[in-house]
Image 1 (tube, rainbow, N blue to C red):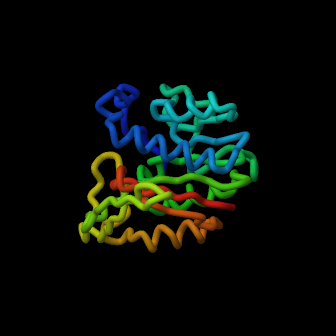
Image 2: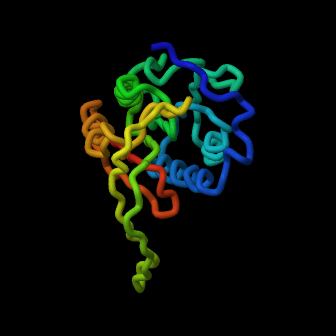
Length: 206
């Protein structure tokens, strides 16, 4: 399947960058920097906010996107990255692979694994329903959040952007974890932060 541009450049405005998305950027940056990378490949340039921040931290960032209007360093797809094995310390794909049909998303997982040397940070939508949420303070540790999510049970319908989401029927968290493992990754951690309950973040080691 040929990749298709789903949104125009004008899509990335203040309406797009709502509060939860800013928090999502923070988690992406935190997880990428936890690898102490010198080089990063960012798949999907978007508004370039994460790229610009990483560059200011001294990281050499290369971007790849299918939309030439975003002026990526590489015009190309996550399913066929024009780079050699282990080229980049870390690959960042934040809210990207759900824009691909799931079989293509699995190809992207394998390509991301191939070109990274240390690991990757991948985040995708998590549509599971929040059953319970609470915050509590532990002395000398700080605030901790506890919440429980359950599958939505819904069948995902393509909305012009997302082909699938975690928690929808046929795309369980267990399935996504298995496919990341089949791509060659070790899942060092995966989480849904209480302050970004619609996003699932995976820190993946090679």
